[in-house]
Length: 98
Image (cartoon, rainbow, N blue to C red; front, side, top):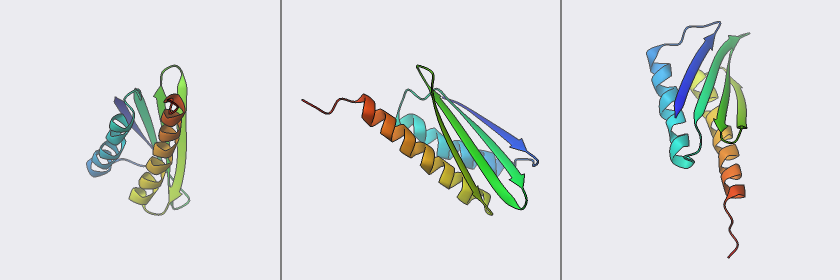
């Protein structure tokens, strides 16, 4: 799985990159069809904005947004929203009927 992290209006330190990669790497364990995740970290008006976009074949995109004063909390919220979307899509694909 390819993870891309982009920073707008701020520089991203190594600790934040490592934290993002650790959180986003769990998506591949959750659902192995996720091929790429793009994270955009922004800082506007005293708040950290996090946007996560994951892609899975065939041309399916998952998008989550979160905002907070603390960067790690915003990352956690966006990651949780993305995981919920991926789980719901995976459950939809799996046939639970005998």
